[in-house]
Length: 99
Image 1 (cartoon, helix red, strand yellow):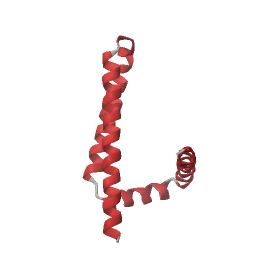
Image 2 (image 1 turned 135 degrees about the vertical axis):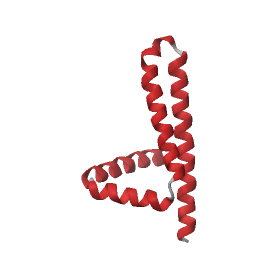
Image 3 (image 1 turned 120 degrees about the vertical axis):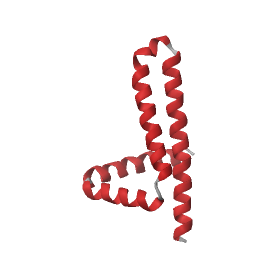
């Protein structure tokens, strides 16, 4: 059962990583194609590179490593973690209500 959950988490993380990478690539292409966005192109490029690096980290990490990092983050910043969980819950609730 635990292995199935870990596999599901890994698959979800891979799909999310692919979506993030596609979004970053799209922003980067849009910024470099438009003359009015040339000033922001370097920012988009930097953001795209950071997202790609994060995607690579997600793909290379095991679900157990990600869990350990999440637990360490919550222990290090409990108030921020609680606020983030509340915000995510709010957004998910809004999405579910609209669906």
